Image 1 (cartoon, rainbow, N blue to C red):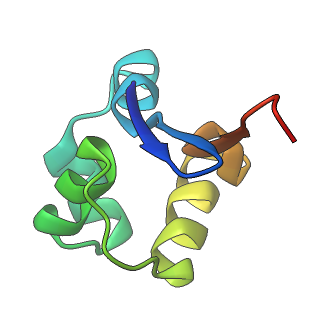
Image 2: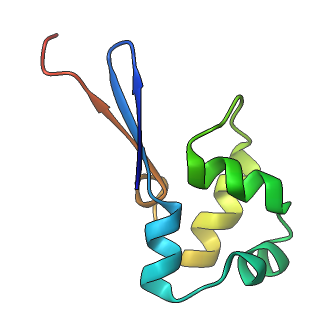
Length: 79
């Protein structure tokens, strides 16, 4: 899990944990979802510059999960 701090909270990128839990390789995921390896690596590392909702839709369909199982935003408690 990778934590990326932002102004009002942080994001948790959980794809690597999901791959481990489901015993799925990055290469298998790449082939099965027709997703570029570099895109998967950026999601795993939390190095996104933009979000492609079609990629997240394919990942959610593949793992039969919700978006927050892949990436989750946690706001600061200081609102």
